[in-house]
Amino acid sequence: MDIIYGEKHIRHAGRVELYDGDLVPCFEKPERAQLVLDQVRARSLGDVLSPEAHGLEPLRRVHSQSYLDFLRTAWSDWRVVHGDTDALPINWPVRSLSQRVPDSIDGRMGFYSMDAATPITEGTWEAATEAADSTLTALDRIQSGRGGAFALVRPPGHHAAGDFCGGYCYLNNAAIAAQSFIDQIGDRVAILDVDYHHGNGTQSIFYDRSDVFFQSIHGDPNQEFPYFLGFADECGSGEGRGLNRNFPLAWGTTAEFWFEAVDEALRGITEYQPGLVVVSLGVDAYKGDPISHFLLESTDYSRLGERIARLGLPVLFVLEGGYAVEEIGVNVVNTLGAYDAAAG
Image 1 (cartoon, rainbow, N blue to C red):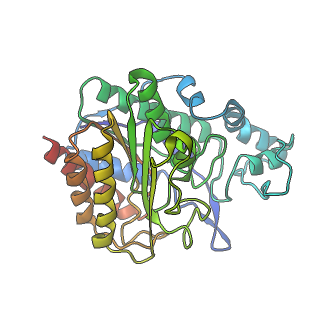
Image 2: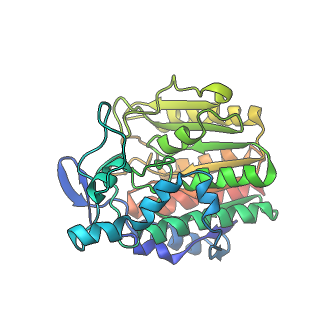
């Protein structure tokens, strides 16, 4: 398996996020990617390759130009007003408020963000665009004949929608790769999101589309972030009716019940028969994750990789969440190693 990894992610290193009523050190930090890389190399998973530049056009196919312009300049605009601190929003344009984009950087932070846990730093734009390039380079490897590839990226992407960031995510890497595959090949894509938190951004981007089948297995939004999307009755609209499936599960879910949802999702992918499967590989369903409430063991991720391999389809894995940093590399590489062994 080819692994695509770039060093620019270290330039995005947020200082604090709002969590449990306090400003705390960010859970999403550079150490996460390094620990995965260490396990990739220790277990000789495959060749580690550098990303190739793909330009902004693939990003524009998923994200609005106004949002990309904001993301590119947000930190420098923030610094002029607030100095050398992370940029975080303080209010949002909810319901009855105007949906106009303010001139103020504080107003724009709220307009283009969904939470106060996703700081924009001096290196956020560089890190996020390299993550997209890494994911597109992994797609290139699959297009050249590889059965599977892994984009070892941060920041993650699945909470980012077409015109806002949130949940530690700025550009939706999985969605960018899926759209690029459709643009190049014209075939359909299935996205399987196994991150503990619902992939609200990915769902919203493809909700009315028939060429992308999105399925997410996650904490019940009645209990868990992002709270306002990810319910079981969200099934797609228009041409996408029936092609969005959510499997919300309660706190304390064990591997037994989690795999029931995984197996149902995989059956759906088999019936859909896409040309590519994109796996949003968050490993925060692990029992030791500090901001999650499922009970998977590290060995369960090997079982996940074996099941995905049985699809017999090209698979692009993209790193999403997972914040039990001591185990993140083990859980990711357990998935990928088992997939590689089973796929032959």
